[in-house]
Length: 541
Image (tube, rainbow, N blue to C red; front, side):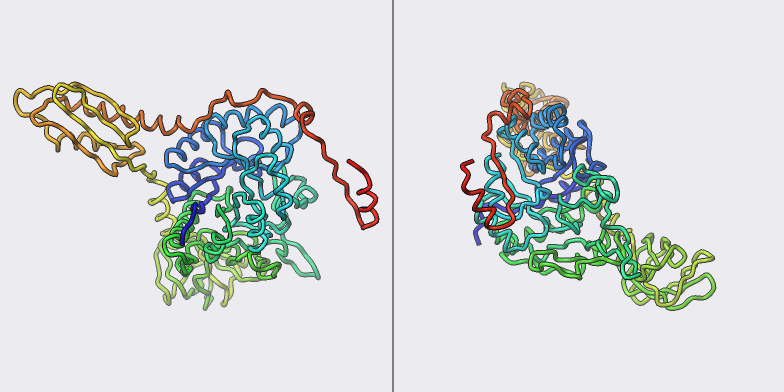
């Protein structure tokens, strides 16, 4: 099977730690918000962190997309947006994700060579809408979560634009970008980045309580192959409000499944182990496959609990005084956090109990857990693991404590009467001391290699280190160390600087009125029946 371009794994980041975790775990790109105009206003980062994040992502050959996916007021577009975009344009941001058509027009006019992505919050469901966006130089469509695979494929076929589709994480009950519940009920606009999560609240209907608007999280591992085959270019993970451990685990699991598909041409069978890991890190009462093949279905709802559900690991089989006997149906680890509860939505704090295990237990083991006096626990209640300590520690050790290294090929040359040379990836060359004939014993290749290998806490690791040197030469070991430091510092600066843009390409700031004066105005007319349509068509607009 031949592919022109591999589909990317696109990870979320709400802070710089999440960004690094995503890169370390193997994503291809990260989307992140700045200090303004982000649909997750609590997940935006400041200039210093963004500058570092762009540098870190580009150092590892990853892309970074800036979210400007809220509706803006005219005064914000004219007074703040220009300088905000200009800063990150210069630093080399790879693309901007936009919801507001006015913002789209403004950015395209002033920053004409900046890649623009149409946000899922535009809620554009047909290829006709995307044809309209081409005049703004939109290069990518972030499809609404509500589209079927057939609808996604048609948009790809008709527009030939890059397609980005959500494959994991939270689903909105309403159309993304069209939900007004937060504004009406919570007095906070989701389209201004302040969604109050009204769909996660408990409601009463027919005298019954239920989280009737709360959807399960999407899980698209089993759909990766068909998504790629139907033209999806970017597999997007939701979760800019999530912790680094979540970002790292989900990114890495999707990385494995995408790589497997490209290697073997078939979808990797989704393992129970991976489902348990994903459930342990975050789930809302298991997962849903979303709308790829289903229009609407009650199984998508998580109506008993709106937040992390945990993983079922056992049940209460006996109560005696302030102690309950738990029988485990899965292995549990020391320091796991467990919660005893039932599926009843009427349970309150007296009916639930959360505690931390001191020791681990195997499947089939029984454990007497003391609980707080006054708790009304009962036999038959289920026991859920709310935090898997071993999993968290494993993720932390692999992707959070240790930064990913960039492999390089380097060559060190030492010839009599000439300067020592260290080159990296045939891109950067640094020159050192002149090699002299040794008066006694000369430096050895082993000594040189030892000094050059001291990369320490740099971002680099050798893929290959070649050494070409004459015999019986002298050069101070300190000069080799200096050569190494200068070479890698220069190479790191090269990697960062090559992605920066020249701000001379930016047009001087113009008001919305001035920009619109250069654009042919269009008129949109709403009609309710064929008679009205016929009347409208008589006019020459």
